Length: 250
Image (tube, rainbow, N blue to C red; front, side, top):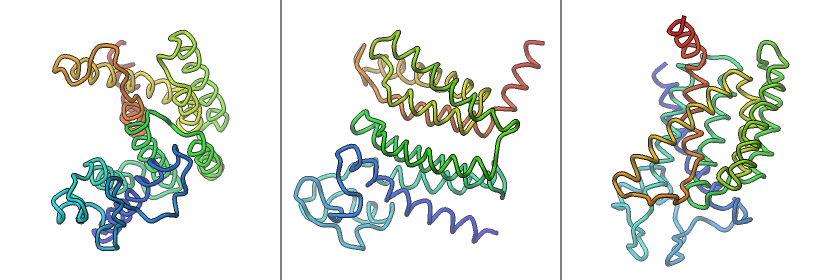
């Protein structure tokens, strides 16, 4: 069984490297296949031994072999994070159709995190592709009751749409569409919990960043990573958290 988890780790890191490319190129309308990956500063095309997830970054000291400029740590962090999330997914959801839902959700989250960090954009193309993926997966692994996916999608979309309209730009429409998709995957209760946790985490991190002078007041920060954190917590532990809350208030 250890070899299975090692396999998941390696596959996750390899896919994480690919997701980095997708998250960086799709918002710019570039192909994810060609040209080959290269240093954005000197144009040095990366060879196969420079594309080994995490390891290449460490062996090169975090610098380009061509111009010696520093490589963004976002690349190895997202590669390692993808691998770790792939390994932990079977532990939380088991070996069933739901595991494919979890792995697809992780894949979506890595891509939009990279895109949101660099451009503060959640691309419609990415959401559209994963909408098709989740539609097929929810047919194979439906929520109970099955229509909770539809109600959850409407709830997530409308909730964020109202906030976006009221805040007049404080919430991006990419987040609105993302929560509509998340509502379809998670269902009504968990998408509401996801929104609450995402907002809570975002508020705590944002306030902490302002206190330490990392960001300035009213300076926009990517909300995507907070959505990822809040949604994964809701997806894996949501039902237990809801029961704990009900027990607490009663």
